[in-house]
Amino acid sequence: MEPGEYVVDTDDDDPDLAVVVSNREEPISEVTVSDPESDRTVAADNPAYDPSDPAVTVAFVESGLNRRWPEWTEASPAALYEGATDHDVKLYTFPEARLRTLTGQQAAVMLAEETVDLTALEERLAEAGWQVEPGEQLITVTKHDEEYRIYKTGDVDGTGQLRTPLTNLVEEYST
Image (cartoon, rainbow, N blue to C red):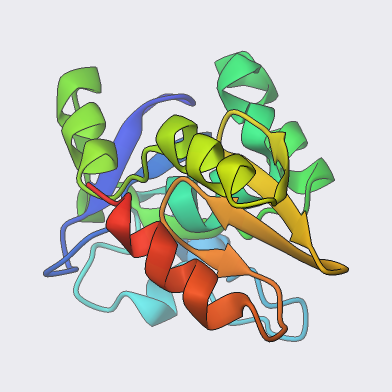
């Protein structure tokens, strides 16, 4: 598996889309989990897999890359690991045999299953008096000194009295 390839965790019944950011080529028996206070290996967390299986580090697309580094799609595959690290994207290391590579079309289908029509939502919010700052993977909206970030996944960050009605509106624009 190479950086930039889309993958899913085969042990997960409802897997989230991930992208390979590093193929360490070290066996999982020699790679520790990402917890800095632990010396536990990836092999210890994956006893069903051969300890000599290569370690592959991934970042989840929606919950990690899109949220913390919306411009990640503009980076070269070779720059994904450093960029994800620089943007504090949580990384996960798996045995290679636990991951399945997806085609770009399969990844697009997975992404399309959980998206919000941000363009239409932006128009609706602007008509309702919200200040809207558009982005590729999210929009930032402000009204009555309350600021919210709405992600393409439908997640809404922010707290305040307008959160519930805003979340309900976002659901209307989810596909």
